[in-house]
Length: 169
Image 1 (cartoon, rainbow, N blue to C red):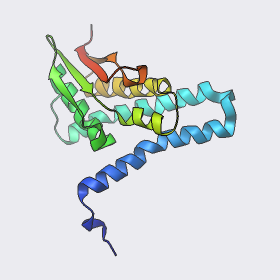
Image 2 (tube, helix red, strand yellow):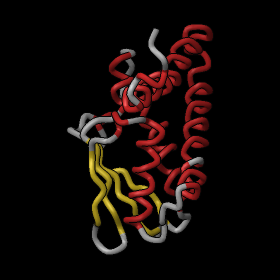
Image 3 (cartoon, rainbow, N blue to C red):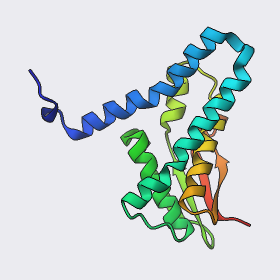
């Protein structure tokens, strides 16, 4: 019999985050099957709220690991790090770089949320609202002086995702 300690930590992490990443999509599909499209708007709003709350948890994780969040680049790096922690190694495929002035650019070639829309045969545009709620809340709680701007999105048909962390106007 194989003991859990005999399974490499990287494999355990990948499998656990894949399962957790699947859950919101499975719940959404089941709820829509049960209630039909009659409550679609309410389900969409509930999903957005759940992702927003998940994004707010970024600050607690950043504090626990003493991640700096004093400027845009640090906020973007902390955001990216916590996203990888939450969503697993599947999320570790882009870069964070300094933008113009006090801004930073976060890019992704692939996204676990987008991959789940394909896996479960969903319209990718349906998950964009949830993604944006998560990202916006995450950056806001990491440092309220900054905000997330969305430039490109896999869900919109772009080749990758690009987001900017900027000081609020």
